[in-house]
Amino acid sequence: MGISEKIKEIEDEMKRTQKNKATGSSLSPFIRYIYFLKIRDEGKLARLRAQLLEPGPGSGGGGGSGFDVSKSGDARVSLVGFPSVGKSTLLGLITKTRSEVAAYAFTTLTAIPGVLEYEGAEIQILDLPGIIEGAAEGKGRGRQVISAAKTSDLIVMVLDATKKLEQRTLLERELEAVGIRLNREPPNIYLKPKKSGGMKINFMSPPKHLDEKMIYNILRDYKMLNAEVLIRDENATVDDFIDVIMAGHRKYIRCLYVYNKIDCISKTYLNQLAREPHTVVMSCELGLGIKDVVDRIWEDLRLLRIYTKKKGVAPDFNEALIVRGGSTIEDVCDQIHRSIKERFRYALVWGASAKHSPQRTGLNHQVMEGDVVSIFTK
Ligand SMILES: Nc1nc2c(ncn2[C@@H]2O[C@H](COP(=O)(O)OP(=O)(O)OP(=O)(O)O)[C@@H](O)[C@H]2O)c(=O)[nH]1
Ligand SMILES: [K+]
Ligand SMILES: [Mg+2]
Picture (cartoon, helix red, strand yellow):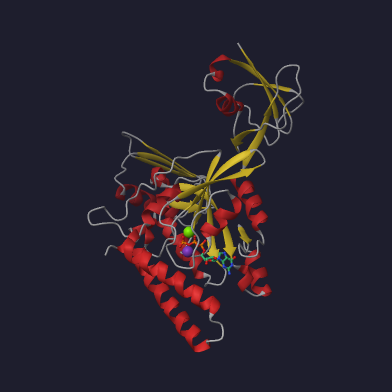
C-alpha cells in the first residue's frame, strides 16, 4: 500500500470513530478509548503526511523553485506557518477559495491560491503547506514553501497563540536562512565592484561595529579585490555588509505576525500579544479580528489607488488603478497600457501629491493615495 492509500484508510477510520463519538455519549470508557485511538492515529497520520512532503531521492533537497502558481492580481501575500496553525482556515475566511482544513498536521500539501478583494484591488493570497524546523535545509517541502514566500509582496506569518513564543523566532530563522529579511530596509551601504584600482573604503561617520580592516577582509573572502565602498550607517554590522555583497540573493519583505486561536488563551496574554509590533490577533473559530487582519494586509502592502480622468469628464471613482507605494506617473502609464509612455507629453495631477491642483508633471512625478491623473499624449 502506498502512502496516499494508507492516509486515506486512516482518514476514513477517523471519520468513522468521530461518528461513534457523537452517538455514544453514555459509554464514557468506550468514548475515551475511541478518543485515544483517534489521537494516536492523528500522530500516525501527521507522520505519514510529512513523508508525503519529503523530497524523493535525487530531487535535490526539496527543490528551491516554489510552487507552480502564477502571480495574479495587484499583489501576492503568502501564508507561512507551522502545521495546523489555521492558514487554510484563514484563506477560507478572506477569499472564496476553499482549502482543506483539518486537525492533523500537513493537511495542505501544495500552494492554494485565493483572491482577496479589497476596495477595488485584487490581492492573491497563497495558502502554503506548513513548514517545520530545518525547512531551509530542505526538510519536508520547506524549501519550496520558503521559495514561494520569497516571491510575495507580504508574508503573513500565522502563529498559534496557544503555542510557545519561540515558534516565531524559529520561523524567522528559517526565512532568514534563505536570504529573506523581514520588516527591514536594505542596509545603507554603497558597494560598487570595479575591474581595477583596488579597494576604496569610506565612512560617513565612524561605524560602531565595522572598521576598514574588517571590510577589506570580508571583501577578500568574497573574492572582491577591486571595489568602492561607502558606509553611510554608523550602526551597520558585518551581517549588513555581507547582505550588501549578497544583494542579489536578499529579499526585503514586510511581515505581518498573525496570532490565531485567541479563543484558547487568557485576556492578559492576548493583550500582551496584541501589543507586539507588526502583530494582529484573531480567532478564525469565533470570527474575531479577521477584519483587522485584512485591513492590516492592505496597509502593509502599501498599495495606492489612483483614479484617471478624461478631459472634460469627472473622474470615475469606482474604477481605481492599483500601483505600488513610491510609484511615478511612468508606472501609472504602464498600468494603463504598455505603449502609452512612448506617446506621453505631460500629466495633470490633482490630489495629495500635487503642489497645486492640477499640477502639470512629467513621467518622474511620484503619485500618492487617491490622486487623480490625466495623461496627455501626442
Ligand atoms: N481553537 C481554534 N481552532 C482553530 C482556529 N482556527 C483554526 N482552528 C483549527 O485548527 C486546525 C488546523 O486548521 P488548518 O486551517 O487546517 O491549519 P493549517 O495551518 O492550514 O494546517 P496545515 O495545512 O496542516 O499546515 C483545524 O482543526 C481548525 O479547525 C481558531 O481560531 N481557534
Ligand atoms: K491542519
Ligand atoms: Mg492548510
